[in-house]
Length: 97
Image (tube, rainbow, N blue to C red; front, top):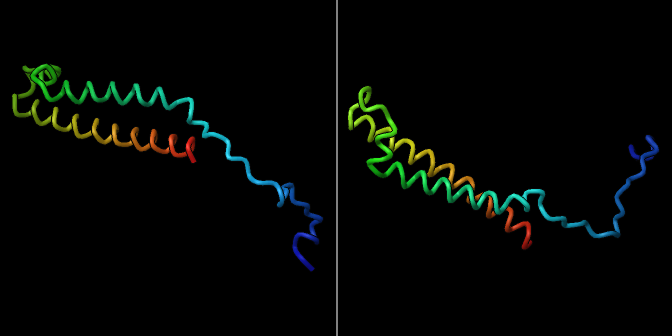
């Protein structure tokens, strides 16, 4: 006796009907993600400048420390940007797939 028969199980999936390939729920967010990438790009550029270094308290941190903190911010922001670009690529693949 089949387990499904013993439980009076009836599948709700029609084996002859093709699966729907609905757009990703993330699709409407693609434009927002693209705009966010531009904001992050601006921040990355900022922390490559003297203005970025001035965001840290000059009385508490030396120039070398501020430069190191800027480098850390750039690294973190670059990682975030890569994650967002991956998400955008995933949305586009689902839309075109």
